[in-house]
Length: 566
Image 1 (cartoon, helix red, strand yellow):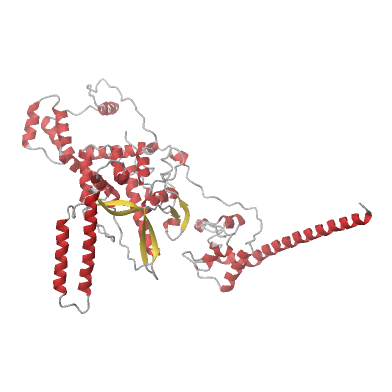
Image 2 (tube, rainbow, N blue to C red):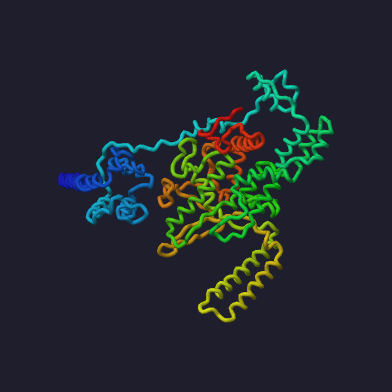
């Protein structure tokens, strides 16, 4: 390479280096200017309007959002990230200060136009902030490993009954426990009840009715060692047994013959009542009792009459929804309905106050807010509706008849509201009402086929004009819910998949994928949560038989409940 060429090469390299250096220097200067812009314009603005509630020096850090550190700003708060790098103009920060949405800050009033313009400019320039070495503080979560060690969540285990020379050879192991406890306290058993007392106790306990004089006399005169066993078998076989004990379950299910509702549901609540009574009288296993109440429509080889079991959810109270109000208010009402149902299922099956986790992690039990909304997603994907407890052909005939009656009823309403009234309106109305009666009489099962039940449909609360709302159900669709920040449905957080409770799952709970997840939830109740589910129902039966449960708080097996006496 000659000297001239070498000089040209060196010159080119130096020129390229100088261009690169200048570019880097310019970018560095721009970055510094952006940081200076933050320090001169943005930090004072935040300090004046935001730091009182959103800084490390705040008495209470609102919404888990700290704006006085780089890490806190980038992390965001319980409403999610403040900045959208891909679409800066859609950043949550700008929506909030622009009063463009449900969240409007600061609470003292909207910022001045020039202040909002400064925030917009800062975000568009990349929201530069100085490196301050801060680290975002994560909220301390629930220690589920420790939570699983609580007594009521422990696996069931068999323990041999104590032995005692004074147990009188009773074949019932419960007697051995009782005798061991008496001996520890230095007590002796009371004398055995005489026959007339025994039959009255057993009959009242199992049937809720007194024995007839003839039954008392016959039992007193029998004198057989097997008489008591035969008495119990006869009482358990009585139809009154299911009526007596089914009533306790119906109380837990919030059963009522009539259910005021804002929806058009024709279902007959008594079909669920009769199903519960029949289940007790038929000795339906408890795991199947649970499955059918949650997903009878998804279980194979069940007769249509078993759809009445869906009444556990089907008879749930519905709160009136005035659709002339805004979606914001209707969403709150719908969320209240979910809370009521989660509270009912939690206390009934698991003895846990799950609804306490709607606004925040449970204060005492290992139930997270994400657990709550995982279950709420099941309910958001489930619609309360009629379920016909007859064959499909008969159900179709009833549905067709109902539609005809609905059409005729609309015609009657138009005639009644006509202004001025037509002279012949009364005769037409009488004729239409007679047609309704004819359809009802001619349709088998018209008044008894529709049970309170549920089906698969996701609920959407949508605007329907200014300050108006419509409820839209999408059949066959399932819906995962976003966590409602502090229980407020207009402040959504991250989305939680439908699944079972973390503390009762043997491993990390898997998302439900079969429709709403009702069947998967029922399966989890009788498998993953089997120890707790079994303890709760056994304790309920014990409490109703003897007046006091082994755990006296029969619907609270959590940390705030009583501990078991045995």
